[in-house]
Amino acid sequence: MTNLKCHVDNCIHHSPERCCKPEIHVDGPCACGCEQTCCGSFEMQNGTGSAAVNACGRKVPNESLQVHCSASNCLYNQKGECSASSIDISPCGCSTPDCKSQTECASFRIK
Image (cartoon, rainbow, N blue to C red):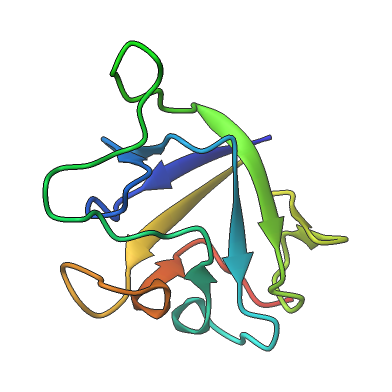
């Protein structure tokens, strides 16, 4: 399990610096830098402050979660899973991403 810090606060799964999903996917099969990766699990909030909630109506952030990864050039990619102890998911080149390609795995390191 990887400690994830997420800074993409307009994602439906976001909870302050955390993610409410049990697992995410980092895309970027041919990536040679973090700007060529993205969070494949990103989903834009619908504008009403919608977010992943549990039965009590609260966000349930995960301190650590499974991170599947297709960035085969990343040092931390071990057979499609992230082996880093922690990673950062961030907006890429804009303050409020509106699609997956505007997010990045800022922890990507080339092999």
